[in-house]
Length: 331
Image (cartoon, rainbow, N blue to C red; front, side, top):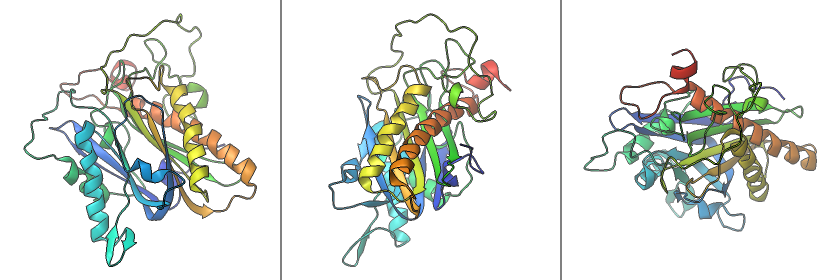
């Protein structure tokens, strides 16, 4: 298993990522859009999720494909970001055909960043325009760290961020992950600097520090956030042709990557959620073997993406938490 050319989820052919952030608001959103509609599914394991149109992603529903997936800050207000994306796609002629009308299918998930020091006293929600701006910026290259949905994110002890990673399997199938890290749990072991995700790191993508020689003694962590204030929302993607049921199994498997990278994860206070996307541009030569490997790769990529999001976060004036780079890295 090796990283893709960009080591981003956009190594999956046919996918682009756009981001928009507001420095005064200390928030933003990230959109994953396909060149064509793609198969999608979702797995929710956190106790406090915030979502839009995720019921559509059950394998027994009428709609089997979506036009885009949105990750956003802003708590429930951030769900408006998907409305902005849907409006942009409608104007572009995208969406589910209903007579002469087009209805873009844009599921989304949000994280809580309302207490990070930004100015949240708006007259009208800024998230619709942010979603439209993110869609307009969609490209195969994008910036990690304090960008998009990860702009105002925090974790249990460090500043969070937006991360991504990819890999190419021996079969030639590509798998990628995208994560906005706003977790209750910690991405680092003890006080750091080593990441829980270290065993799955490829190269020096988040410092190449490996694991510590000694682990701190086990402890019972105390919550540093309240109900609804924490979550990690993510997307894993592949170019393999998957049914919606198969995509759901990939999303479920990818949740293991969240548990590898954040301790603890999937708590009552988190809204942890993973979307799975499959563009279907590559047929599986051996469906049983390939689906097995795609699920494992999705978990590994997600663990790496989470660590990269925290690793790449940059310090800003007024931050409520230190960032990893400020404590252990380039500064």
